[in-house]
Figure 1 (cartoon, one colour):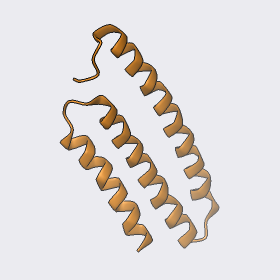
Figure 2 (cartoon, helix red, strand yellow):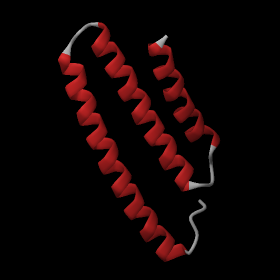
Figure 3 (cartoon, rainbow, N blue to C red):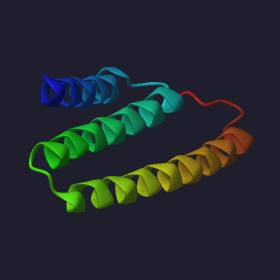
Length: 88
């Protein structure tokens, strides 16, 4: 059941990206949800087969997600500074 929870989180993030067409913040949050769903799924599989490489890769995924969030926030601030609006 734990693997299905990870897949549900991934699909929720994908649905958030596909259903949202106008708000950039919701798109960024949906991408983050997908990253966390993939991370959860990878950690579950890693613990199931008792392999430490999956846990190491999940830490790498968390750092990529954090850096993506920081870059997206910086781009969003520049976009708002230019257009005075965050809607697409």
